[in-house]
Amino acid sequence: MHEYIDELKSHLTELTAEEQLDVINFYTEYLADAGIETYAAAVDKLGTPVQLARKVLADYSIKASQTMDDTGAQTQSKQPQRDVRTIWLIILAILSFATPVGLIIPAILITIFVVPFSIIFSIVVTIAAFFLGLLLMGVILIGAGGYIIFTSFWAGVLVLGIGFTALGLFLLLLPIFHWLTVNGIHLVSQLFQKLYNFLNEKNHFGKRV
Image (cartoon, rainbow, N blue to C red; front, side, top):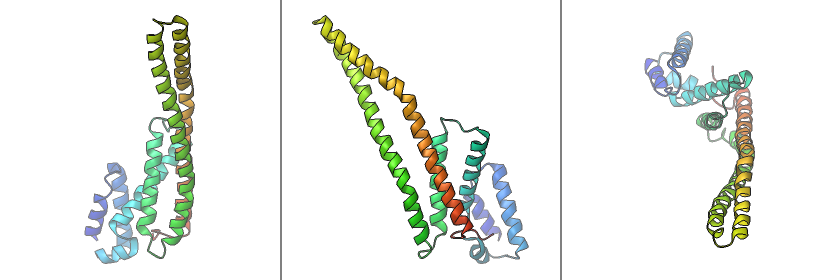
């Protein structure tokens, strides 16, 4: 049993020391109460240490995300990274516990839930290309206008005006683009959390405690 717990702890380095201690104490007590003393028996009951660790990490990531949503403590700068990490941990947890036969339902559901992510990603890429085009056009036209103005004043002013307009649109719309990206990723993260909770409730993977 100690070998199992030690291996589990080695896969929980992403958690804080206090969180690791809580997890280790919980599963040590659980295995002891269940009378499980061997590594093989622990694996049969809880899955391999890697599988259990992935589920624990997903649980903690979801809990942290929900807590931040409830308290409003989620920062705009770090929210996308946290959401992407949560999505990834959920996928790892689901796939880790799924058997070849039991993988069918989770795989179908993951595919369905990936669709909105793909749509949002495509939209973000398209908008990003538009914004990059505005930025490049603004910079190029401002540079060209600065050169032309010495040979043809009014033509140079016109080109400079168009360039500054493009640059202004870029700066004006940038916060909107950022908001759409952040909230789009957060929406996908929430959808994956619902998928994870659904599979957990239906006991499709890993819920053996």
